[in-house]
Length: 374
Image (cartoon, rainbow, N blue to C red):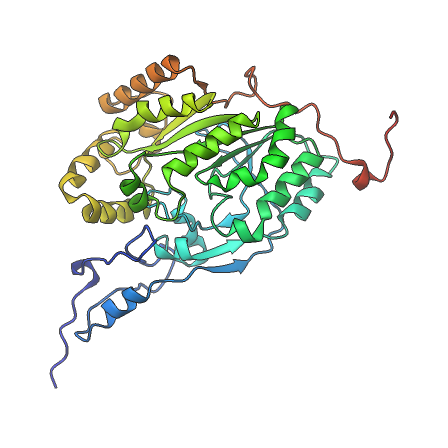
């Protein structure tokens, strides 16, 4: 009996799973065995794709919850990530490669096999109560979105915010979700004490592009509505234009900034697309499927901003903006920022707009000691 003709994975056009960003699920870089898709002639590959993938959540019990950050490219030194993996499924997410540390794929596994840390609030109480703890603002949502869909049920980040409020601890939040408005009752009183700020990330106003690029994120309209509600509640709110993808969404930069400013945004920041490790092939696979006519031109711009590579942080994230296209985006951004009254993103600890660290104290219900004065 003749053997069936096997078509290697690279020759099979990846199928789009409904509500997912990645189109494939290749093995992570640390796995000893490699997975490959192949067509066996019986249509089994197509049938498995039609079934789709369900999201699974694994409970994780880490030893600490405050993550110390040592990077010259960010303006904070600590963060909290209540989840690993992100159901939003943004195809460009720079955090995808972290799933390889779990022996999972940065592709579909990153969007469907999630890890949650339900003990985060209790762990945070313990770490903040340590006499050796030195307070600085904590960043939330910088690696995984804390307000991804499973937060609606698990409510981990809401518990974390209650702890930070009790300790008068400053916090900055970044999200693509309108679920953040659920916690206005905690954030607004903190904002009155200059203890919190929030940024809403909006990459495009094109609903079709957003659905393809960020399949399980709330629509751009809902994110603009969330920005407005946060600002109306007295919370210092900014707009994050991230990432700007040259040749795909960078033409929308000014219009997004103008609309955000009209709705109450008071500051802004932007990032250029990053394609570290497994993100690059996943993004290129998506480009070929979504916009094949522009794929080569988009990648040409990206490589020109990274010294000829798909990703080189020394070029694209260094202090000096070296390439003409990156310089053009930076000039456009600064001009729009001035025009619409959006102050610079508040990364400096000495900024007059920085959060107040002086109010930090361990609550009396934890210390067991009363206040000296009423």
